[in-house]
Image 1 (cartoon, rainbow, N blue to C red):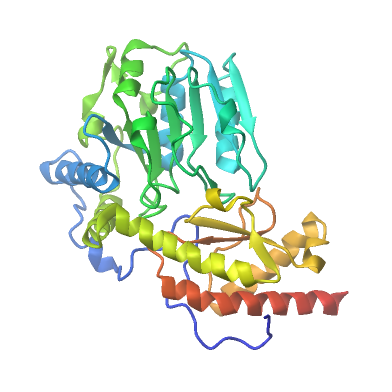
Image 2 (cartoon, one colour):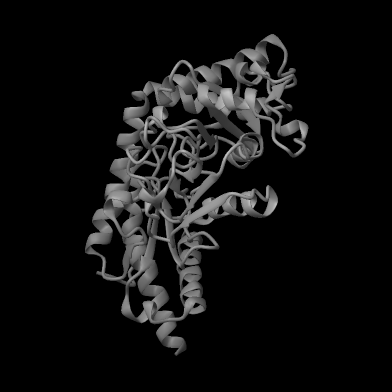
Length: 391
């Protein structure tokens, strides 16, 4: 039921952005008071904090002991690019994409790396490609969770254990909210500013023993800039995976990531994080099931994200508008919520169909999502009334 009467209850935290995401509950700048500011990241205190970030990441995500974990520059984008430019080219590659970031990796491999043997498996927003067509004797690049489409792979069952190629997985909006099957993944990347709400510019690169073997036995035909180099003299630069970062990290951001990791551990680790995200997504799912104007962009419930939940307009009058009209309607709705201070940054991604994208990761409180729902109905009713008045 939509109404022009403003709801009385407001979310305590209106931050529902899909990146950077909301800080963990109870966060304040005091959490950064022990940051190693003004100190070298190579000093004992700096390196100790970087090592701690790596080990806590391993502990909470349950990364196998034989996998290396490194802190790298340029967020998740930098981590993915390091993998693509350092590992691909040894054999053919299957590129799998169903949203903006996955499509970006396709563009990089086809137009920048210009690999000769590339197959593309793509699907529109809201759907997955046919994963059965992928050949895992080739290298495979895919996103685990489509941040801009709200579509994720349900699990790692589509990846064979006896694959010959490497699997390179952009997991930036899945890590800490979904179960990643590391036995099926050779490269995993993510960024601090997604599920745990850390600060930006730092990426995480996780390598399986098979990925390390590729790095040490295969040399790409193209030159690699220093910021991408993972080997020296044909051997893995082990220091990168022990806190000896390629470039200077922000120790303030490191402290913030550590704070988020400690919070995650204190509430019960990965299982608790997943449970919180699932509970949040369920709030929206129940709302959408009863809504007369909003639907899930993700077609199959089994592949719907529990973090970046993407919603489309199902109201007949709005759905009948052309793309520009729907985009203008969405912009007005989002702007109204922003002005009321009840929801920030919930418009769909610029390349995605017009609609809403509401972050449901573990740092979001379920009560805040529940408080938001009446405001969604209010904003829709107000925007539709404005549309009719202008007609």
